[in-house]
Image (cartoon, rainbow, N blue to C red; front, side, top):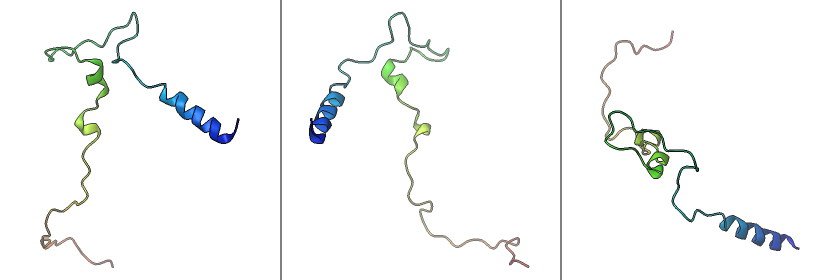
Length: 79
């Protein structure tokens, strides 16, 4: 078998590993209980999603507008 054949076989095997059904707990296991303040228990898909603070949106520019800095009496030149 050539390298190309190996590569094609590997790609086909990896493609066959895709999820075909929704996630469910293992047999005999249950999802975590709902917190006391929650109205219902979360589903498996909801548990896999991280909170927004875990992956914040990227901010490219720290300043939204240019402003002159105020005079700082402690901003002294090095001695």
